[in-house]
Image 1 (cartoon, one colour):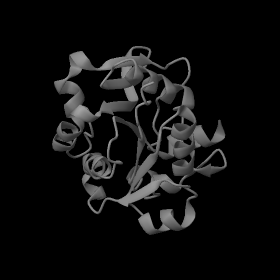
Image 2 (cartoon, one colour):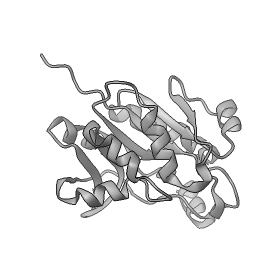
Image 3 (tube, rainbow, N blue to C red):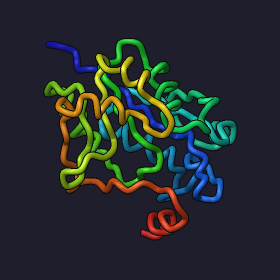
Length: 199
């Protein structure tokens, strides 16, 4: 019997929350826990085989405060340059032999374990690039197969993350509908925070 593929989660949690008044996103409290703790719980419950989180803003405070279990925490010294640099740092820190990675943004609290599981199932069925879709529109999380790691890192610039990779291989990206089990909205502004934390 073939071994199941190794698909760790890469949680991008370096943002400084500029539009939130400089509150680092990893340290925002949601549903009784920090956003980083929530995100790690989601990807673990969804079936990822390990976790890596990229820190930036207030990294020392995050390390001292967040309960992350066996998650590998790595620092992005260039986090202010945007999400692209965090993706590069995270890809370089993945466990050797990873067959794919599930990229999760720390500020998407509406993503559920069910959405993560659907992306992992798509990879198991043969997809090397997949993205959660919400009523047909591509969103997060995103799954990247190992064959695309180098290209993803090379194209990660500014706040684009994996956008260049997904655009270059648009015909290969499997959209996995998750609108019935998850919400794609991210948490960027005080209004977003008020909506999420009061729901």
